[in-house]
Length: 208
Image 1 (cartoon, rainbow, N blue to C red):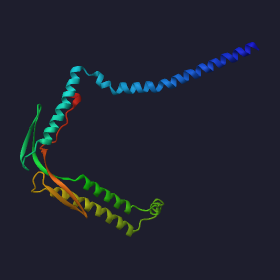
Image 2 (image 1 turned 30 degrees about the vertical axis):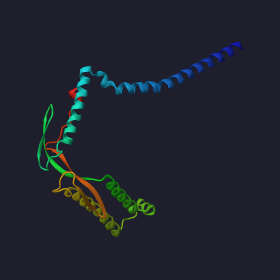
Image 3 (image 1 turned 90 degrees about the vertical axis):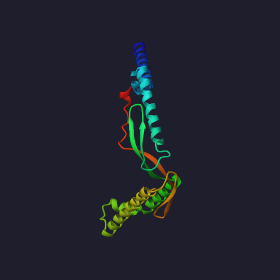
Image 4 (image 1 turned 60 degrees about the horizontal axis):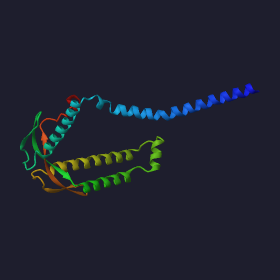
């Protein structure tokens, strides 16, 4: 009887130890994953020498300064005037262009109206269920859908053309309005720098 009691006690102790080990393993797993994620995130940074880190930092600062020059390159310049931006590593040739910058509140209002119109034209649940059941689309319904799509594309084209032509012959800072459907959009003409060649983003890793 004593032997049986000892066996039961030993078995119970082993089970308790196993459960405790399992709990400890479960608790440590997230910490190990978190530590691994942290190490992976900073792995590249840890491999850099102090000199490389400084080069990396300098490359970012140079790019920031270049973008600031681009934003200010055509301040006070006339449309069509050629401009050259000089940096430590390259010269960027370009021309001053003008574009229409819409008022944010007016654009938001126009988008809300377009969203409401799209929602109103959206098929009802009954129509959607019929379509999912594979009922054939009638010629009249197909023609109606094609007409709506063409109308939306035409409105988008008209809006784009209005924005492109709004500032033709205007000067920087000139306030203008464009008409898109029944919506009037206020805006201002802004002269900006357009490089002759696409800008190539510097590879900070290589420079480091």
